[in-house]
Image (cartoon, rainbow, N blue to C red; front, top):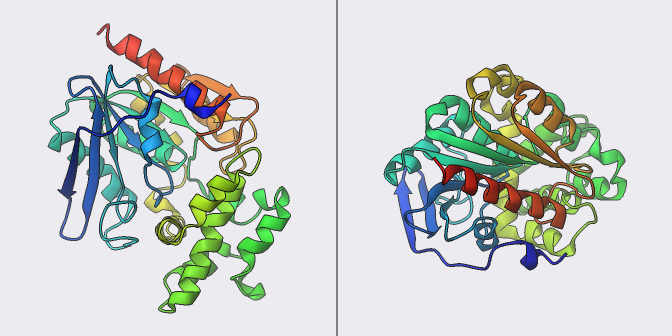
Length: 321
């Protein structure tokens, strides 16, 4: 099914904001849809990716006040690809600064991949501020989850793409790809840094869809996008995402009362589906939807259909409150 027949029509923001969250970082924020609607915040992946105009279209613009923003160092936020004061704790607090700045009491969280990680961590920190959770491509950010994609796991399914990913790293350093890439991506050598960034980002772009999508690969490989995504992702994963091992599941009780819909592609090679089951087991009142013919990307038709149904369901439920 064509993606545009699944999503809501294209819309433009009714306002854009620049929010200075500390002495270094200024976040780009936009709002679209209904200014008096149900507040929902789109939390993009990466960390280090950004939102795109198409992400507005997961939500009924007549019903939702749709908030989208670029996290520290990426997209239209400034400074670009900056690692200073860029940790998970900073991003959690940024989310609540946005909520307060926009004078929102409670909102719905919508996040996929790293966006699911950040949504869960924010909800655990501020459960009283969350109506509900729509989560796609669950990423629990445990050591085993990071190792699957960057060391041993996904490489067995994409050996030709893995060769390109490992190419910037000398053979003797390939036993720890995160550490090796961290050295390259923080190098003073701009050519070395950009080559590593494009290889890192292309690896994710090539593996995000059930069938590799050239448009996705092209987007991920664009130098501006690739540099922020690679530097910030690697920075986070080198530091174990700045969270304790298994922190999300260990603190699941804090959000067990919050309505949640979990959507996961059966053949997700970036964030394997066991993570969705692990989370669902800890949140037994959540609804788990498995998309049987999809990978990681929110833009695959089955994933997109499930996401729009989830926003429609919450719209119906929250409008009755």
